[in-house]
Image (cartoon, rainbow, N blue to C red; front, side, top):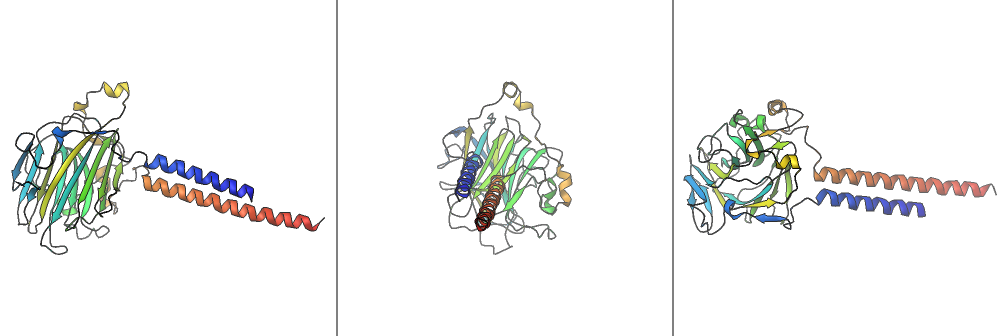
Amino acid sequence: MRRFTACFCSAVALLVVGLGSVFGDITDGAMEHLKREHSLMKPYQGVGSQWDFWGSTLVTSSYVRLTPDERSKQGSIWNTVPCYLKDWEMHVQFKVHGSGKKNLHGDGLAIWYTRDRLHPGPVFGNQDNFHGLTIFLDTFRNDLHGMDRSFPYISAMVNNGSVSYDHGKDGRSSELGGCSAEIRNRDYDTYLAVRYSKGRLTVMVDVDDKNEWKECIDIGGVRLPTGYYFGASAATGDLSDNHDIISMKLYQLMVEHSPEEENLDWTKIEPSVSLLKSPKDNIDDPTGNFRGTPLTGWKVFLLLLCSLLGIVVCAVVGAVVFQKRQERNKRFY
């Protein structure tokens, strides 16, 4: 039994070390710096100088309403200062609410990091065939055949201007990944975090009033240039909602890069994603996810947990077999 105890303790120690490596990169605020020139916060004093707005956008002392709960509205707000940070994290506090009942509301909002700003269009109030990154918070299902996911649905898209967003399919053909999240008519604060660091894009949500981040998207091989603009937009159609931005806070991440990366002209990088299959191949994938995505934190956790359970089972079986052999040997004395 001493051997069993030693094996069990070793397995627990390995699991603890593994968990530390999995969750050690989650934001703790220790190594991040708020960049006020790229942040939108109450009482919104930067609006008019560091932030421009368009369309139905209404700026109050408590929120920035991109669209009211009215049909056929579009609005957006854009940072006027281009961002030259290589590694960053954007925290967005938002609120989507309205009088529409279940499935009778729309259309949603989007968070942008793009080359062009203040270009109205059909993609949640912004232009199609954009250059850069967007995170969609889609509240209305257009694809009645795509019943494998529930709405509201959060997804990400990287574009170099060559891909058009397919509203009829809810953007499945160009989606990098996503998750369902109940973000409408919440009585508490709802948050979205978008992190880009060393070619990795991570999107997390806090929409359950638990004051903790839940992973939504985690994908490597993402290339984004510097010098693009942050913004937010929203749109309504035949159905409507209030789409409010409470705050957008950008943090600089302190990350070391190789000399080659430091000498690279990051403004010349073309937005792209290195995957095992292209976004066009994603059309027939019912999950809407790429096979080329690496293991996420929870997947690694489950893998470590299964490994621990396997070690424990083997140790128990070994202890039982060893004990029976000892008893059998005593019979021959």
